[in-house]
Length: 187
Image 1: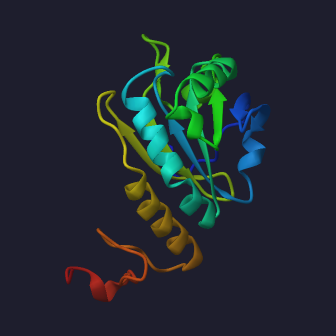
Image 2: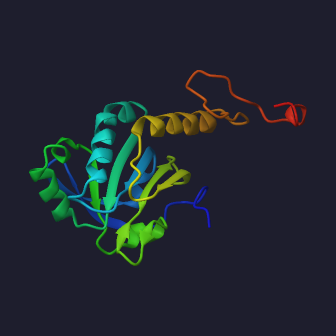
């Protein structure tokens, strides 16, 4: 069942961010755009490349009013250990949520029950706490933050311009469409 258009289910979790342990709940998502980036596990191989790519685009995401949260079924203590021991992960400034109870991963339908690990899932969440986009990748396929940024810009445009939609390969400032009876069969 699709999570698109659904409100994020209630959760409460501990996270590591900027040298501190913090609490994060679904209420923290309200009033801003958010990205949830689920990944299988700390101290792995593809995961740090993705998390570093997100960090490399974090300033641009913040300019768009987006907060980033990475999530795995590891604990917030493990996140701190990885942050302290890895040059790549040590750069991360966004919250790294621990989900050892697997509640959040299960709520977002990315939990691989057999392994007890999250699949590679990316979720764009609007300021109302509603999921607007979902991407799920197989374990060996890393994600690209620049593609994510384009999706966020499109989601923000559509939210701010009711009645318009963004076609394939839409870029900020590009042409949009206004669905109507006149367009049926002409695109």
